[in-house]
Image (cartoon, rainbow, N blue to C red; front, side, top):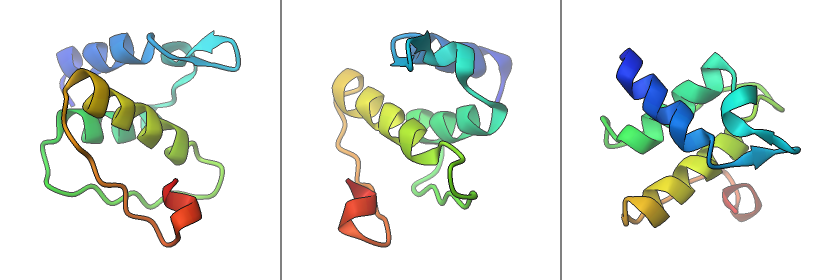
Length: 86
């Protein structure tokens, strides 16, 4: 990811709060990579393999909000179960 894309991701994340803090302040490098992959849609599919409690569900959800509400696109979330996809 180039610096301009990273800065844009941080700007978009600043629109959200996580436990009272801006998401842009608490995001890790791995979480911003997940967010970037979904928002910039450089690939047709994104497969995320991370450990439990990594933050993938939250940052996938935030990226989906951006794609659906701001970019006006439909996005499909595929997971092993309906509960996990929700």
